[in-house]
Image (cartoon, rainbow, N blue to C red; front, side):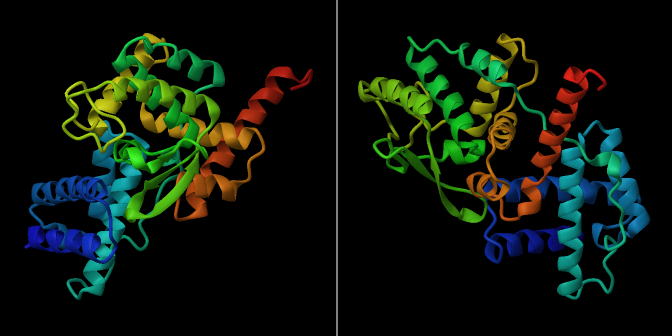
Length: 293
């Protein structure tokens, strides 16, 4: 029964909310964990109560998930049980008074300008693969795109003359994002390699593999991670570059609403976490340099 209700919820999200396939896949994984947890308690996800859900969140931490992943699982659970109430499967929502401990709140990790430059330098731009990777890194930092948005870019989505691109974010929402000179130069270098290719099997996509297939999210994550390791920066991810994009904009005077639009956040509160990052950075600078800090 729980499995059917979960399928109904995912179908609702796809049809009524227009969520992307990647987001639906992530929701499905979180709900599968919830269903397995319920089974361990000899229950169904449909019948779990507040105490069960608190224990579920604690179990996710115990399994080694980070705060962001646990917060997402909680958000999915809230949406799921709200749907069950609205659809008449439950009379009450067990997540209404479910607390979200402040200890879960973590600030996004980001790189310094010097670290970003060190990351870029790891790509060998004399090769096609290196030129492609450098263009990907530059574009992630220049635009703050999600990795799924970047992998979905077609050649026609980039206007190099004007200096902007068009992408489709969560919920298939379209937005236009400007591209800086450095990223445009890296892109032009890569496209010169692309122009010489004779075997592209799917040349509509901007970034392709050596076999002419579109770059995937997994390949991009692996590539960024490897360059981060080479640069001595530890675990670097495409999402960390997105955080870096937003943080650097705010540190240099950009207003929060503009950053929200560039990131494609539906809600300004999602973007406001970066104000905590910059505030903490200011406090750190004060403590470091003020004589009585």
